[in-house]
Length: 119
Image 1 (tube, rainbow, N blue to C red):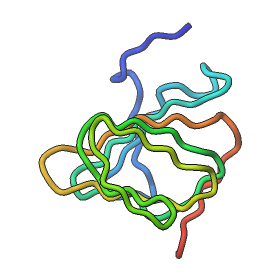
Image 2 (image 1 turned 180 degrees about the vertical axis):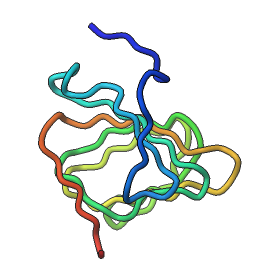
Image 3 (image 1 turned 45 degrees about the vertical axis):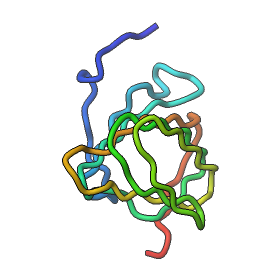
Image 4 (image 1 turned 90 degrees about the vertical axis):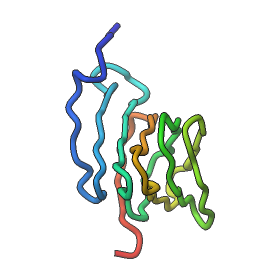
């Protein structure tokens, strides 16, 4: 069992993102089946269109953003739940304003490759 405060985890910049950081809260060293990650995008930040091999389950904690999943774009906000199947192109554009867009993301602990789309 592991209990730690979120502030104990380093926030790392997402290399392909704009004004976006990620914390790995539970990784394969603690959780054998799933990883739990926290993403924070400053207003106007985001991530370009890309794919992952693994699915994503996400819960929006605060803020809002335009999230493209495949051919559809959704406006998501605090309290929304997002599912992104493996292999489906997706992107994020945090809304301008005073509050960052923050969400938790659960992914299977399996090999994953990120591929930028259109680059």
